Image (cartoon, rainbow, N blue to C red; front, side):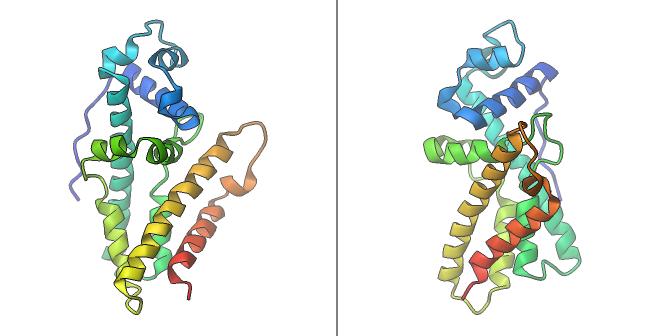
Length: 212
């Protein structure tokens, strides 16, 4: 599979992005100023966001695309491997692929933030979110959906599409909730940190699709 080129940023800019994503996930983009981002990133120059990205909105757009690109690349890689083995073979397998490829395999020290960031954006700035994506970075998502439709031949397509819409919304909400719990370092979260929980999430979501 051809992977899209990624615009390289300096180490300082990448650190700003990681810090900004954390703050946006916690407070929403309207609750964070460029000055706060610079200070949290240890930048003495409070104009650092403008210098590297032009504006806060452009920073937000880049964060949207970065996360969506990563997920889409992971998802397509997983699908390529599954299809090479004749799969996905079940709805659960397809849904678990969606779940696991939604996670960052190399998160920053404070944990994952992208799902919370996206869910909050969808509630408050959906037009900005959709405009940043420009209809891209969802090919893996659509491929998974086509497999799920294939695996549910007895249900009318309209009903399958409705259930996929509900399942997609639930997926984002559950993973955002998981991120929020794991971001709390005041106590352990054995359920949310367990790999088996990802399978249970997948089973729950698959049940939304296949229930009578």
